Length: 290
Image 1 (cartoon, rainbow, N blue to C red):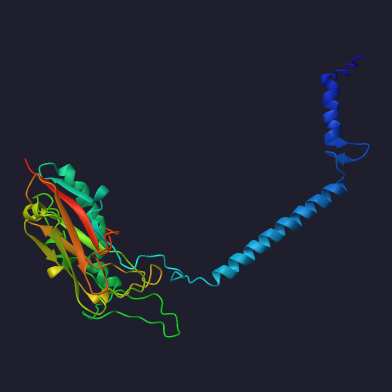
Image 2 (cartoon, rainbow, N blue to C red):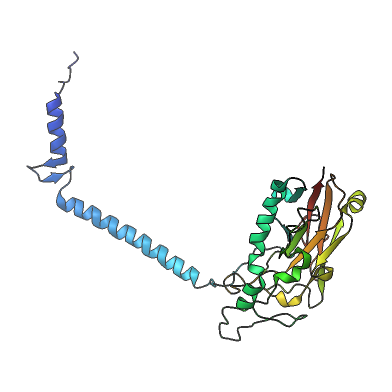
């Protein structure tokens, strides 16, 4: 014989729920007395307090081993890479001389990029250094901070400086300037105390033929030793990387030209086929004319 459970009315359900939340006879809140709730809250307070203290202590101990200025473990390549400006997708510099919109974006990027190199800003923030030698600033037991940086003036970029230039870095006339910079590596003595420079060539025979002639600023694509070593973003607050500007004078129009630029330095290898950016950079240049 099946005994049917008596169905409770809505009012009974509500009353039972109210009694569960607060039982006036036993003085229980949600099934527990005040003492029981106090012990539970005390347990979790102690438990999470212990976890917080342990995490804080662990972080404090770890931070004692980390410098605010120099990474303890530098996960970097042995060879710094090169990069170009203006920065574009796939490293393609495409210019349509008759279409200002096609090259104005490059000009705007270069204006912003070169602003910190203005002579007035460099004179205000950085030092005039002796060429041909590293600008070392050792701590000698006392934190030497911030490190001073050597001036790299925008006027050193000659016809690619963009100063008073109606050709907009040559982009409006089909003679564009492309800027080469070397990636920053902390405490790296580029050049091994020997002179170094950047050279550019067409990657293939047909590229070399279509590339035509070009000029470099500073002369011969030289990069001076005085801009090294780099001590890091926090130490070298006003550091400005040395640049090499390449002005392409007569690229064959309407043809895609593959260009490769390399840094020639005693301690920078550029022949690692596994790393296409080690000490070099390759980009495509196309000047469209109608």
